[in-house]
Length: 283
Image (cartoon, rainbow, N blue to C red; front, side):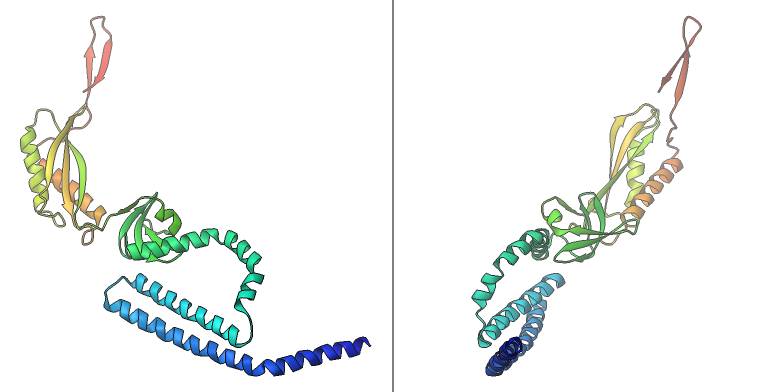
């Protein structure tokens, strides 16, 4: 009797499958048609976004979203044609969806933040940015994370949610970036002459912009020298910041030395006291 029941059940399943076979085939054909349509829409959206000169990442994201939208519609229609109620299917998966929602909370946050970053474009591939304690070259902007190549060669994957909720410093958004460094001259030297020599040294330096012009100001009176602060501007896109800073320091030092302006070492002055002892002080 058990064997007969199993055979009857299998026969009923087979009869139901044969009865619904045309609907299943039609549904699969609808799914295939929507898949081809989704690929066509993705291609057309990508081409049209390229013509309006949006960023490459924004164009890719729009193309992917259009593909997902068409495929979602195709799956729902295919299920209806096959005789499956999509609403009942979604309801049956409700608890699973809630669990997945909690489990994928961080992924969803990073995805939404990535979409906003791609369309707002606070930085693009090739920019040098500072994101929290991570600074380096942007290699890729994805919907989940941003890939940063640090100055020491290490690659960092920064979650987009953390970028979206913190400050972003883009070193390349402005084609003019100011650099500065300190140099000291002896107290007996003419401050105005030293400032003029330092400014002229940077005026002809390769990489330093002519506008704004280099600026040298007296910053303070240190223990052994008068401190000068040297300011100059560079194009961060065309000029390596580290190389420009090194070249500027070398140029100012050589110019001051050629002009006979002393850059003093720290000086220790020893004065005798009345009681025959010694008193040391820095000057």
